[in-house]
Image (cartoon, rainbow, N blue to C red):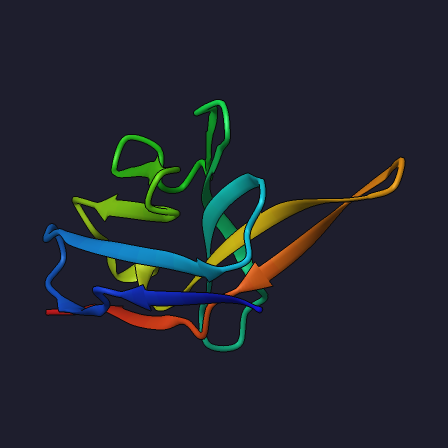
Amino acid sequence: QVQLVESGGGLVQPGGSLRLSCAASGRILIIDTMGWYRQAVGKQRELVATITSDNGTVYADSVKGRFTIAGDSAENTVVLQMTSMKPEDTAVYYCTIRVRVRRGFQIRYDDYWGQGTQVTVSS
């Protein structure tokens, strides 16, 4: 019932910039967190950046000062602006949301993931 669609991936040169966008659709009552993870070939998925409903942000040390995450609650979108990109940034980038679900007096959190978009940084 919840779907995430990423866009903006592609090939860029070292030092270049790229903007990733993600749009969430479906029956979403409360989004607790939106963010981006990435997975390089032969590596495990790792956090890139997240933004909470109160606009708190968390960045991986490797991208601090280079990447910026922003969200739009009204549109249920999240954007990752990447600058000064490095070959080490090459990976499939996945959009994710954490949704707060309340049933009766209990609350739980469900995670949803997009299909991913390829980002390649190379000369």
